[in-house]
Amino acid sequence: MQKAAQIQRQAKSEFTEAEPISPIESPDNLEPAAAVYWRQANEGMEQDLESKIFAPLGLLTENYPDFVPGHLLLVEALQKYERQEEAIDAIERASMLFPENTEVLDQRIEMLAEQEEYLRAAMAARQFAISYPDHPQASQYRQVAATQQENYQSFIKEELQGLT
Image (tube, rainbow, N blue to C red; front, side, top):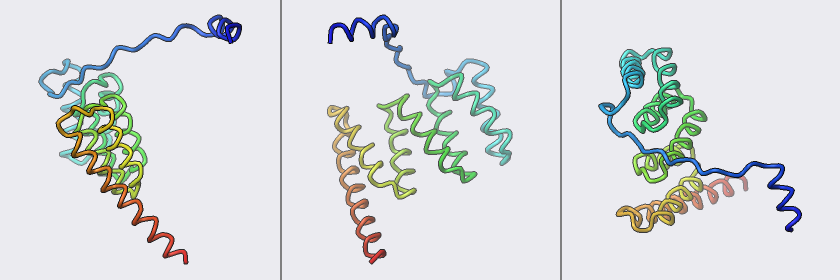
């Protein structure tokens, strides 16, 4: 084991921890370039222009990943244009960036439940409740997890009944 560890250290560089992202909740705190992307995306949503929505939101979420409302607007836009798989990927990314944000978590659980991904929704809620037991909403998310698990069991029963 010591020899293997020595070889691994030679082959791979040391792992460095990344700095956690400090979320920005308000558009007022954005840098000027990010504020322009945000304004353009909102105008695109109002005007119902896909090209004016996704290009700025893509740049906003890529270059300023700490802006939570940008991720949520991207998910909303993807859902509006029925791009469900991309929307789920976007909310999963936001969940990884902001694991403590209940607004992101609520959106994720809702989307997964709409897609009949009840087990994943239950796991997301339970993971939050376990990871943040002192959070004021931890017990609420334990209940959400139990409800989504029940939904999953009902879904499986219906599927099995349909197959028979």
